Image (cartoon, rainbow, N blue to C red; front, side, top):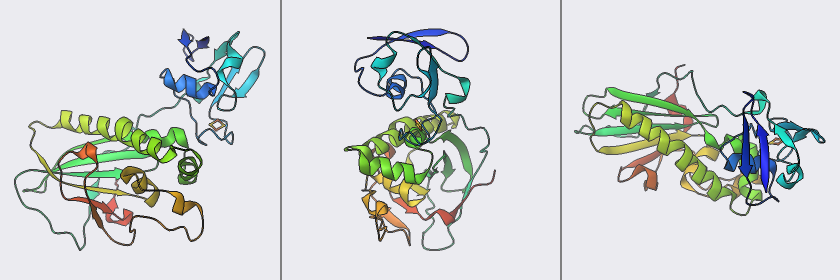
Length: 254
Ligand code: FES
């Protein structure tokens, strides 16, 4: 089955659809057309609206793609997701106590996993100088704009937690690290990495279950009252040690 799509700039695309029973918004995403699925496809927002003759305005997350086989789907500009981040220019890591500063030849990596924005910086561990920063929209936004939507997605979908983690790493952190690497004049090994984020974001990175956040007593798997040290996720390669920090230890000047 094919879908005919009219893009906001007036151009037309024809998409081949493998599974016509999945929601239209999922088909569009698979074809590289990402909509503002702010509620994670639960039909609660208007972010994924498209129009077509015969259907009028519809929430594309609520309708299977096969219903649009005989018509042209128009995507309004307001429904297209924008993952570009234009505001972030720098951030500092503040460690008032508890973490020993490594002074050795090599690089340190700091990552802020925000619900909306990912940011990362590379530091020279010997001099303490920041060598490069980069930022990106958090690609998990397509599963919902806020933490409650993402918890719901992780808990309600059979492999929701794994999808969240894969999305964060493959579509967020890996491109972010590539941007950082491109900004460096010389490459050295990353000896340590620290990650900060709210509890939902940190669980999404480590792959720990978010189920505890969905019901009383709303208990995390990761300890959130102190720094915790874990093995590095695969995307960080051999960087050790790897810290997850409580959010108040990192400030983001805009
Ligand atoms: S209504 Fe479709 S993503 Fe929110």
